[in-house]
Image 1 (cartoon, each protein chain N blue to C red):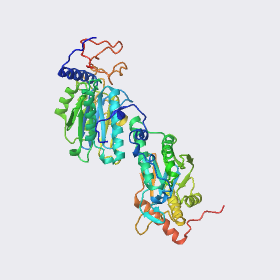
Image 2: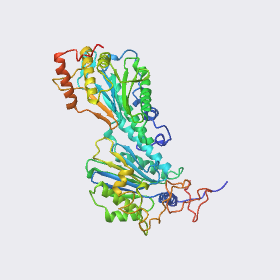
Image 3: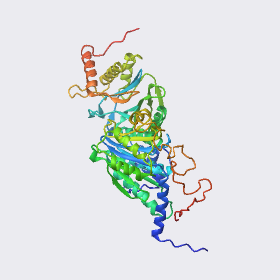
Image 4: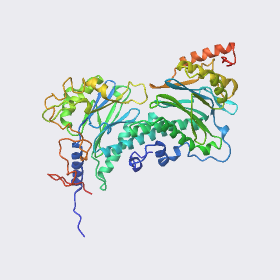
Length: 276
Length: 286
C-alpha cells in the first residue's frame, strides 16, 4: 500500500463489493482468510455475550450488555457490542470479540462502499445477505472455537418497518418476528422478553422491556454483565426509525436501568405477567 | 516496411496536451467555492443519474469534468483506495492530500506513457477540515499536475468568464446560500452574455463540516436548491426571461457526444463516422 499510484486493480471494472476487492488485493486483511493452527482457540480471546433486539411500531431497537469474558475472567466491563452498520441498520455481536469487531468494520465498509459506488443503498435483504456471506467465510475459524454470531436489525424503508435477522455460524440467515436474542444469556433474555413484550409497546416501553431482559440474562448467566451501578455502566441501546440510527444517550438508558433496578429491590424476579 | 516518423518529445507532449485540453473544453464548467461551513460544488448537469460530484470518504469529495467513463473510473478507484486505507489503518488516515497524490501519479503516468491515450479529464479533490483554514482543495489536470486552490476554483469548458466573475464577487466566509448563488451566477457567465441556469439543470453538493454524521458529504436537490436560488432559476428571475437565456445550449445531452455534456465547442471528430471535423486535430501519438 506504499505505492501511491492507483494500480490496474483499482482502475479495473469490477464489483461494487468492498470485501471482494479486498479479497483480491489484500486477502490478509479479511478476517476470514486466516489459517489457524490445530486445536481449539476458544479460550484465547474475550467473548461477548447477550444481545437483544425488538421491533416496535415505526422502528426497531437493539441492546447489548457490556461484559466481555475470557474463561472465568471478566476481560472488559464496558465493551461495546452494538454498532451502527449504516444509517438505517445496526449489528450486535456475540462470540469471539476480536473477530466480531473486525467483521463489523468490514461490514460497515462494505455497505458504505456499495453506497458510494452505486449511488444508492442496498436493500434491507441485500444487507442481511452480505452479512451472511461474511459469516459464511468465517466457518473454518468457528469450528476452532472462534465463532461469531451477530444479530442484525434495521429499518426497512421500502416496507416501512423494523426488521430483525439472526444468523448461525454457517451463514444461515433467519428473519425473526417481534424480538430475538443471541449470545450465552440469550435463553434467559428471550424467556424474559416472551413474557414482557407486547406488539403495541412504544419505543420507550420497548427500551424498558429489553433492559429487563438483559437484567434477567445477567441474573442467570455469569458471562452477561448486569447494569454496573457503582461504575455507572449501562447497556448500549441503539434505536432505528425512519429518521435513522440513534444511540440512546447514557443518561436515558441509566434512568431506565435505575427504575428497573429499584423495582427489582422489591421483586427480584421482575414484573409479573398475568397467568391467563 | 515503412519507416516510423520521428516526432520530437516536445511535439508529442504538446499534441497529447492539445488533445486532452480540447476534450475537456467541450464539457460544461464546474465551480467549487469555500463557504463558512465547508465547501460547495456547483455544476451544470442535465443528468439526474450521472454525477460529476461524488463522495469519496468522510470528509473528502470528488468533482470532475471531461469524459464521463474516464472520470467515473478514477472516482471508483479513489473510493476503493480510500476505503482500503480506512479499513487497513483508520478512518482518520484517509486524507485528501494522499488521494490527490494518487490521482496525480496515475494521470501523470498515463499522460506520459506512449501506449495509452491521455485522459480527457480535470478533477477536484476537496477535503473539509474543522475550520475554514483547514479546508483543502486540489485541482488535478490531465497531465498529473496538482495545484492547491483557495477560496474558489473553476474547471471545464468556459472556465475563464466564470473565474473572472468569481474573482470580482467571491466573499470569504459567506453563507451557503450566498456561496451557491454566486457560483450559479459564475457558471452563467458566457463569453459575451450571461444566462440564468434553472435549478433543475444544476448539480450541487456540499462538504458540510457542521453535519453531526461522520460523513460530511451531502447533495442539495430539488426543493432545497429551489429555495436557495429562489424557485428554479437564478437570482429571482424567470429562467427564460434573463438576457441571453437561450444563448447557450440547454437541450438534453446528446448521446453521440463523447464527453459528458454538450457545449458549444464542436467535437473533434464526427461522432457517427469518426472522421475528423475541420480543422483536423493531431491524433494522440501512439
